[in-house]
Image (cartoon, rainbow, N blue to C red):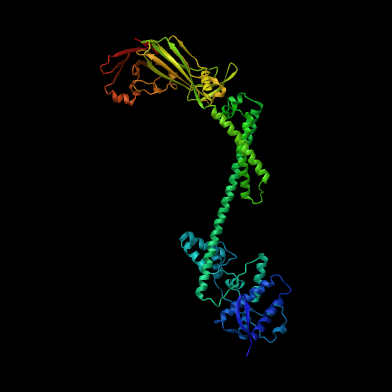
Length: 587
């Protein structure tokens, strides 16, 4: 009768008789002594050897109550190899037979040491006996050539277990699982990595094959999820680096532009430079130097500094943030620096806010100044209208394309040259014609607005029934954003005639006329003032409005070599007129 002992071998519990226990202990002690001269990795090698012995014993023990005997130990040591191979004293096992190493057949595992995703390709390559690169090429063909790889690969990932222990890695490559190979494998791992994860087999004998399969499937699914998570994190990391680089680029470009702009604009503002540079600068620079700054309660150079800091501070923060995203070695600002930047930014915003509030109040009220001048024009007289410019003040080739303004010098005084003028023509029941000039402006109060409107400089001239209207007006340089304009209304008695010069094309403002002619088509024609508005006497019907054509279906215009004859079949008496080359009517 032999005594039994309970042991834990590789994480697995066994019942073993005393003689078998002593033999197993001597076997392990002999291996330990053979490795004593090289302590590096000795414990790891012994743990893997015990784990392998535990796996082999668990395959032989079918019942938890079964006891491991001496024959089981002999069979295990035959498989594992002789301790004598490790320079162990021969007297320890001198009564033992010569052991023969039992070769191990290949088993299919996933190779976790050589994996791109799950190690399926490298595991299959070891099992088949080809280089892993060819196996991966085959899978790429299956994935993108036939499309079935997208379905098969995840299934194999779940079903094929990963080679975790040294013994499983040897079995994966078809190498004998013995002490010699275990030692060699572990030494290779120690030379290649600094640490490895150790996982044991727990409760092998207490689990049925179905539970083992479920555990492996669960482990495979978990590994897929973890790998996908790593891939997503890698993509997010790359995207984050891209965002960081983009922040650095945008912030750097903005700061460089701000520095260049601050030095140029700020220097002009500090020294009070007002020369031709600003006169010929683009609209953006003109805007920056003129209306907002010159009439402000805050000096120009200080406003420029406030604007620079209000924009620069956030971009400095973005620049540092981009550096921190790209490199974790970049240090953050100290608390003192953060508070200082925040204070500077708030002060800059307050300064700009005060200037903006002041700027807004300068246009809070509307002011008007009216000027009326009588013209010696009566019924049946002909008035010719022409818009003129000033070559001494502005060298524009065209009098006006659109509403705009520029800085000019009038008698060495800097003034605002504007072409925002509207011309309208209406009838009057008075005997004589007259012109009404309405000047408009904005100001911080009603009185200031009215004074600014009255201060607008505008002139016109009547010379032998030729009315020459200035196509511009002059005003104070600081009134650019005060929405100044001039509305000119020419009031004519009924039956008087008027000829519009081509220069009036861009100044006419919705002039009422019977034929519904568009403003841009009205110049270079003769009109008669009626109670309903102007009536063209020499216009081509093609320029008449659609409403007039629909309402006057029997309208007819006959042109002969002696002039123009207008005939309207609505009971109105025919009118015949002739016009000379200067636009003067010949009756």
